Amino acid sequence: MSDGSFLDGLDYPETDSSPTHTIREGDARDLPVADDSVDLIFTSPPYWQKRDYGHVDQIGQEKTPDAYVSKLMEAFEEWERVLRDTGTILLNIGDTYKNKSRVGVPWKLAEAARQRGWCVRSEIIWKKPNGMPTSSTDRFINRHEYIFHFTPREDYYFDKFGYKTVYDDPVDVWEVPHDRNDNHLAPYPEELVQRGLVAACPPAVCKSCGRPRQRIVDKSLKQLNEDRPQARRAMEIFEESELEDDHLRAIQATGISDAGKGREVQNGTGSNTEEVLKLADEAKDVLGGYFREFTFPEKTTVGWTECDCDKPDTIPGMVLDPFAGSGTTIEVAISMGLSAVGVDIDPPDDLRRFTDSNAII
Ligand SMILES: C[S@@+](CC[C@H](N)C(=O)[O-])C[C@H]1O[C@@H](n2cnc3c(N)ncnc32)[C@H](O)[C@@H]1O
Image (tube, rainbow, N blue to C red):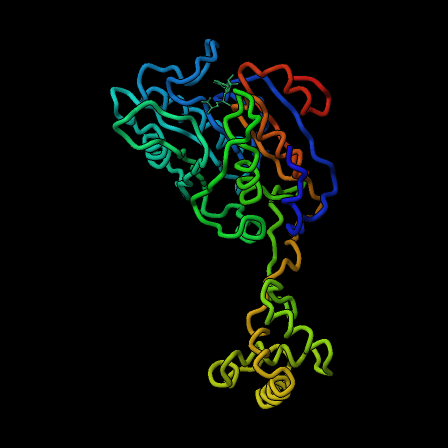
């Protein structure tokens, strides 16, 4: 299990109550979960005509891909009920070959959801550097699956800055190897879930209105990119000098060139343009060419939004996996301090270990 070190630097706010973790027996199309209580559904349904779970109400063994997709659409309708207004779905799905052809199940699913009013916000390619060998000699080896980000409304929670802090480029191709010790039921590696939860599950939501706290990001004055030797030297010169923060603000207001915006506008120092230019000139005299380093400081988290409620207590964000299987989603949510509910039509007994009461209800 992850040691949680990927959380370093995320600057998550503390919440007023502790996370809750439950596992429930139930159908993904008729969830034992309250309305408007979930911030993120992270899941992987049984793929079409792959593993037979042997349950009369299971999804996955339908005769046609269209019948399979329409069952998943029933589930989507139910999922919309349990999602908060700002909640979203990240759904991992792979395809099936029939008569040598890809059936296109992921594409059918995305189109069906789109036609029902869901926004297909992203189609993430999960690129697998390791995978099962194939005996086919007349096609490329399949090394990817999809993760669709479905959003029901325009205003939803998404922490691109947090994601970038941990994983660098927030792009829609995720190269994530399968964990070596995956048990046979685990559909995906922990890192895949971590990426999704960092991006799309708020660490804190208002207990009264359910609005997620949003990260507030701003340019810092002095936090430079320490990977750059020039930036480190610039900081040293600044620390050793008699320059003050107002000098740095003046540099940031004027930018690399003395022409342009900085000459024309007031800046945050409250001084007039002439004063800003004077401060910038003084700073440039001391810093020499290193002054440029202060014109592109790193952005940092300066706080999290509040809401207007009378009782602004917060609870941890809630993750739901309606096809909980071996519980990877729940396990990762717990490691991140989030609340989680796992539902499965036939929950494996060892899922109890993830619950607060050691019971499956
Ligand atoms: C994690 S998912 C599928 C993982 C992976 N994508 C695959 O195809 O093997 C498997 C779980 O879904 C559960 N399941 C199947 N049909 C279900 C349904 N209608 N509602 C809830 N859970 C269901 C099964 O019991 C199983 O534990």
